[in-house]
Image (tube, rainbow, N blue to C red; front, side, top):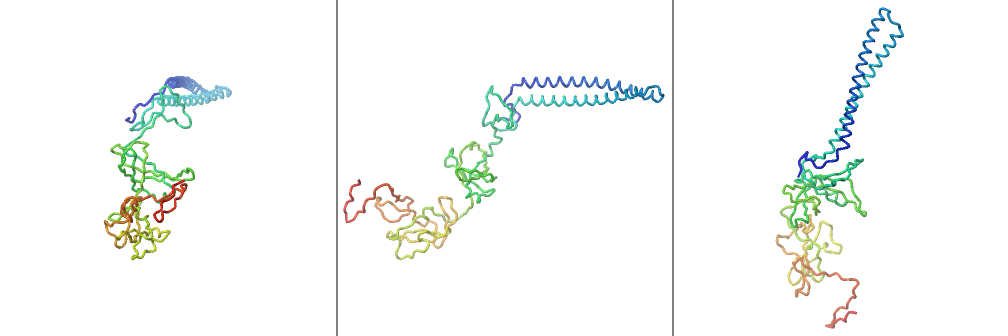
Length: 347
């Protein structure tokens, strides 16, 4: 923790102290020369006034008068040059003092030092880009999350949108923030365009640390007091022999699926059969989806998968576990068992 004005580092001041002494000596010399020029100017002015008096009485030659006038004007000009020289040396002294003051590095703000990027004895060279000596966080009570958003989703992001995010340092804990900036400078990595979205969050408790990786979810919409189902229930499709023969299947269950807003749930009717329940699909959080439709009630059991035949039960069930029916195309296919005969041993 540092306060504003806290000394952070010092640069060797020897060459800057010498430069300041040289500038101060040059200033003293310029002031002494100015005094000499002022004396010459006063003498030339008196001679010029005396010549003016003698000229009215025709007691001085014109050539001598012209010389006195020229000397007076030259002395006056030299006096202005001397004054300018003094101002120039005063500016040089200010520059030297400023450079000497830069040898003491102080904190410009109150904050926390995150990184020290210099070591004792290291040479610091000024260039077009100022060297970075320390990385200071001004206020860790307000943190920013820099989220990379795909170009396909950036059009749905808006300012002040609520955001939820998690960090690996605190598993299971959800933090909240709001979108405060949508940067227009996109980056392309392997032909994937992403935009940086700044999310500001309150970190009064100090739990969030700089450079943590965050998994961000933008809350595009919110619904309250609605019915939701697991997404698996909308994806599951029965075999033709599992559908109750007394129920007419709507077009929504045809191959290829309905429009995006329509969906089907399947409800067990007994005897190992299921019947369809057409629904209208709403928003989703990636795990559950809002549904609405006639006949839907809170607590209704819907099919989300099938139990493995090895469990001793057949037919659809409401359990979330399901058998993986995918096959490996690189394994040989065994013939189906018919008439109780055993399949031949694998090669």
